Image 1 (cartoon, one colour):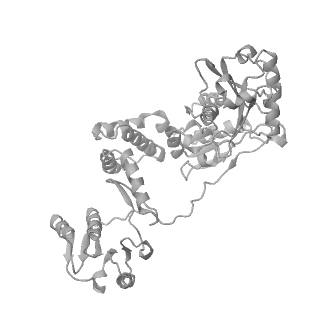
Image 2 (tube, helix red, strand yellow):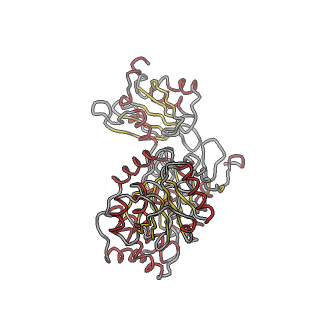
Image 3 (cartoon, helix red, strand yellow):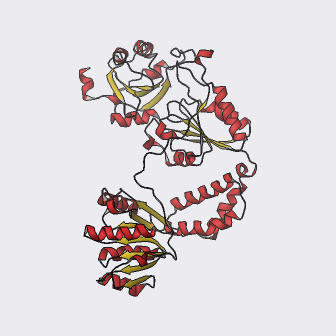
Length: 478
């Protein structure tokens, strides 16, 4: 590799936040004074919500509805004052909520709130409000709020219902346990990595057994994790993580968790930006891109970075396109890390072959047409077609062949396959950038595919798929 093709690792800052229509905050109201103006059922619901947060809730209305009276009889936190609200009522108030229909009443209420320096909400009037109430998923102390900035409350409610079905009610017990255990864990004076590991174990157990109420044995098992070598010796850890073919939604949950706990992320060029941005914001992001026939970082540089960061005690994610175990050169990195005594794991990803098959809506194995799938690379160290491929196996009409890195050598590959006995009319497809928004498909036969790819100006990353399992009604006309 000469100087013109060497590329040095480079840091990339995390993506900035998109513009937010509102600031999501969670306001502690226990013991604070809040004001509600209005005697309607809607005002009663807001008063009940405020009282549930522990607020001393004062309701002012000339006509107080039955729901408010019932609420006041059930809790000592709701106080009913049967008159209209006045300026003096806003003294020492944390929040004010009003329910009015007429613009004159709304403006008078807002003017009193502004004069007292109190932020206010007018029920169902987002344009006249300083803040809004979201749709709530309540697993207290776990609380999730959803806002559409007043644009579509019904949509927010629909999302809330979806989350309600996904989050078992038992999660409230785990959230309470976390609240109870946090001071105990804090008293242990653990370093950052040990603390994070304990809470990762907690989260994993909570999600695996959401309906099981946590007990002392769960707390003990969390602390037992501190005996693991990577938490007591200060040595870091490396995870080789499959980033999938491009679509961030194809990441595994385990990959997302690894990114969320990483101190450093080393990522390839073919990893979609949306995947890299799933790392926690504090993580150092380093581009170590390697691209065929383009300036690339050396494998030695990448291994050196992995070793340096891991020896410094950091949790490192080596983010590789597709699956690390399939043409990802994972073996070289694993060997270097193990030789240095650094713990390493592989988190598999969706390989491009699976994504391409899904996009084509084809099964790679069919009882009558394909008894096996074989994956090869058509790119040797010298950039040419490898000369040690099993051509007899590749010419088998009952196999589906997936070719990685085969665009540049496609003509030579097609010629050799046909010469070795593969039917020239065997269906073949090129999938460019599988699962990306700009994905393209080129269908043909293996004999005609090189010319079709050249005419379409196909670029890497592209996958070549060959076999009768890929047959499409259009293939009959090819």
